Image (cartoon, rainbow, N blue to C red):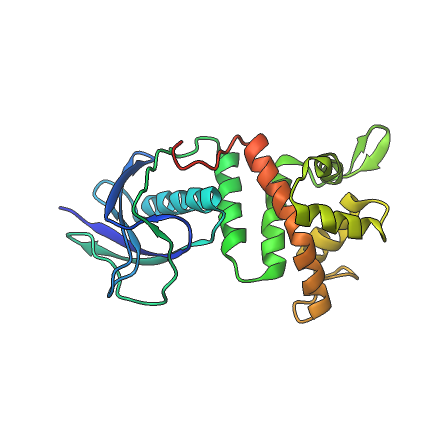
Length: 248
């Protein structure tokens, strides 16, 4: 007997304007567009599949769309037990529909790549400047160790060295402009981004912890965000081999 899981999707990544069926991770997903009285939604038959596995597949799919389109995508959960796919009733209107949806991607097999895509969607979707910053930084942490090591005869954290070697590859004009500003007051931009950004967000016992109510802290993190985000995107493309094409 069919047992459909019905999940509302909130976000502005590309989504089909007509009901569309895609194959992903060995499962059939039905994507329904937003209509006058219903929200955009995704549906999977739980027959032979646990709800945990199904929700995870849906999250992996949304993370891939978030990466492809550089947009937030949120799983609003939903309900199961229906004999046919049933979309949720109308709520807040946040969508980006397309009449063409040539989806040709597959489920990423590398666990670290899957984690990086998931962290990107989380960072892109969360409504918090400090946590968005930290989300992108977690992607850097997958690639570079955060513990002290000897690098070229000097004691340093590999993640700081990794940031330093990646900065010359950045191309976005906002990142380059922000780096010029940082260099006026800091001799080591990579160390600044680590210490004032990642450490200040992740560790509340530090003297330079980010105060979510302090607009000065939020403005600084917002200004630095473009750099950390571009580094995370660079690693997703070069280290993890993630294309931003929906075709595959």
